[in-house]
Length: 434
Image 1 (spheres, rainbow, N blue to C red):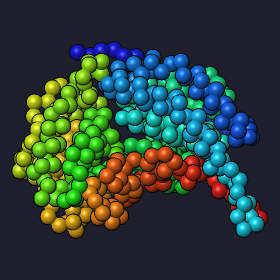
Image 2 (image 1 turned 120 degrees about the horizontal axis):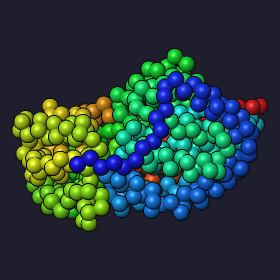
Image 3 (image 1 turned 120 degrees about the vertical axis):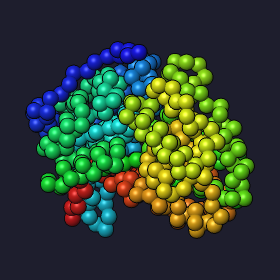
Image 4 (image 1 turned 30 degrees about the vertical axis):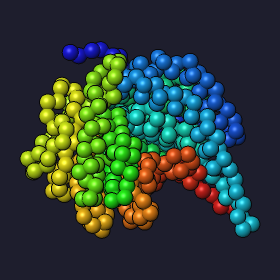
């Protein structure tokens, strides 16, 4: 059954240049304001959003399918975390003195922000706020899969922001391409590897500044002395099934030592069996629908390919209701399987066994991606983690950049990074005086 959720106005490609020109015109006055004034404006904008959390969370769930607890958490994180982020950016771009010289961080101009559908508010906000605090204006294109939740977010901010400082444009991939090719000074993007490469090609002609994060196929190594219950419960399953597995930092490949493999597989299967699929407003549901039929087919194709090539299925693997993928745990996964090489982006935990740590490291690194990774174990864990080709490596924990740490990918998982003082500064031009 198709349910109507809402509409947004579509932006035509031929209006992009005029919108970017408006953003350039507004940028001069916005940049002329002291940084503290720009932060104060964003603080007032957040107060507008505070009274809309429940309304926005329900719209979020209805549009994307994410359960209401997670939707509410994401909206709250944006509303209440924006002020802290804005203040951190302001601190990062303060003028500095080094060796008798002055280092300034000045605005770049107009930033194009193109955000994904899996965390449509959080990911967008992580790019929009540093750009605005740094004195840039923003033209924001949300994913065409989640346009509805983006619109009230921008509309609320624009009740406080000066006219022209923040624009939203709505449309499909070709609109994003037109925005990239327009007279913007910077492109901040989170999304697929293919889209990131296309953006780099289109931006190359005018050498536009880029900050892009391109997903991952994150590995996890379980050493012989690992806390098996902690590894299975805290990271392997919770990470792989969070947001129906539609998460760039999701653990997709697990390499477990032969000596503990049977125990680990049994524990993962027990925990995974507790997960329930269903709609966002159904009690007890913790795995929602896959975003669209194309993505769902890709996940199921990965599972089917693994089975055909000899994977041993510990849980799931078939009987996927419409719009969903049942939680699935294939074991004995080998490198030639699609699930071992490519990003799956679904509720799947792919397990392989190893006998030698060098072998585990080699298998973990055998990917074009390098966003996150994790190692569970004792004294050797940190040394093994340092051998992994990833921008973020968790030791007996998740691998996301927490606190004031950067969110950074290696290899083909990113170009530039955001978060942390150094990440915030990438939204500004460094100028040396003296």
